Image 1 (spheres, one colour):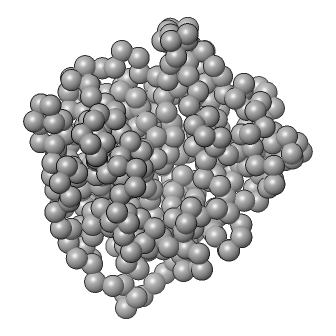
Image 2 (image 1 turned 90 degrees about the vertical axis):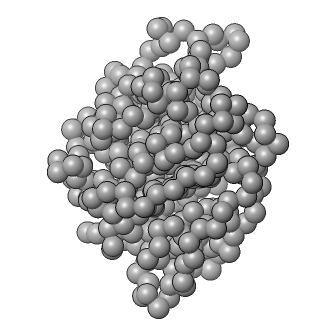
Image 3 (image 1 turned 120 degrees about the vertical axis):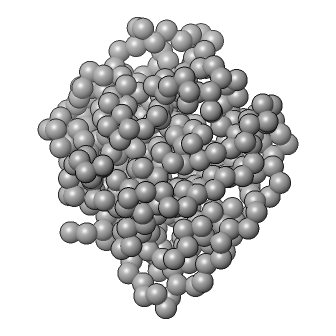
Length: 395
């Protein structure tokens, strides 16, 4: 079965203009690709204002929730290796019972966690679990669960799903998440990328993209060419002793929900893997069935079976979005009628996207920094800068 994306005729597609210059202070990078290569790209602004270093498509940035898609690649590699099962109760791997207290008889699976149908929900930033604390302790809080909807019945986008997923991955392998995801989903694709800077090369660290607020203040990753002294969530009381960390207790340490540092060119490599249906440089990385499982919607909005975030999420697979969805209440038409799959990201003033068109086997990766908390809106649920960068894909 191929990707279950909405099929729209070309007549439904409005003309798409190429991107005009971004607002002052905003830095952007984009790479449009086909099955073989990056065919067009561009970058504007500075990666590091203090160093007056111009941004390029090879500079790594924290891409926010696109990170989830890379986690899904790692999960599916472990599924194909027989070390994980998408439909097994994750309690079996965790060694403790993960249950919504309002629905204690309903198991929670990796498939439900990856597709945000697990009934877990974000309680503020409770998905940030610092060193010295555990996912198990965090899951004891009833505020982490939706008491109205049982697992499998309702979509609610929640970052907390991914610390749980990363913890399951660690328990299944005995490996720390950052090292595990590097071995499973980053190094095999030849990428100089990492979660929270631990596995990137020194050269990548030196090219880090600094994230700024609209007033010019630093939000994140002002590294000055040096690795951060503590690459994980920590508190003064908890310190930063990773030597004593026990894998399988807190997979959220390395920000699986959003902490991937990767360049626009690196994202394009992942996009080419998807359009090539699991093949990278002539070698099979994942089966076609696994690519279908990731990209085919496990949930589709029907008017009442989930939260869309003002029409932003309307069809979701295993850490992937599908769009557009022509249903009342959906406003996810980022590409002016063109059927696409991928994932968006938003954090620390950054907006990002990795999107593919399975029909034409093309796609685009992009990001824009320094957008602030409420950048100008576009014609869709996406921001104007995202729509402008998406337009660089052309037809």
